[in-house]
Amino acid sequence: MSGPGEYRADSTEGITRVEDLPKALRVRRSRNYLRRPCPECDHTCYRNRIVERSLHDLGDLVRERPRELLVTYSQHYCCKCKNYFNADMSDLALPKSHYTHRVVAMAVRLVVEDGLPYRAASWHLWRDHRVFVPYATIQNWVEFGGKKGGAAHPRRLSGRRAG
Image 1 (tube, one colour):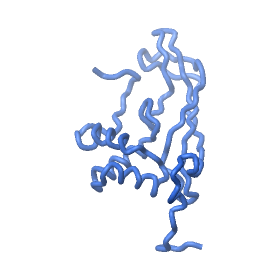
Image 2 (image 1 turned 90 degrees about the vertical axis):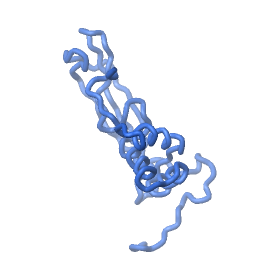
Image 3 (image 1 turned 180 degrees about the vertical axis):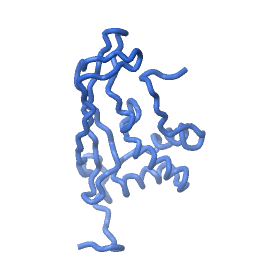
């Protein structure tokens, strides 16, 4: 039985192959709706199809396993403006991202506030949070939002870019 302050060895230390790492704990989330308003014209649109997306999240430290969110979401079609759009998932992750906002914020904080190098931050995320993020990805996040003054995860109201 482990108590406070007791050393617990890292069970993944010495593993050199990705296939040998512990399997992810899968958690299901749903953004599946029958109807949604179109972001372009506010016309109520029916669901066209259902899609699934996988996101890496901060891991389960009790079980020492990574955590993966499986998000089922609906894709809708607006017959008025002939536009396809997905159900909003901006509360979980940026579009086309493989990581949740929690992972991005933790990685940027490790580099910007704690001053860790990118490789050390990548190792820290695996060791303490059981999420593997390549150090080059962390570097892109920091350069995008941490040091250059932009938002770490800007939120858009519509599905299109401003500009």
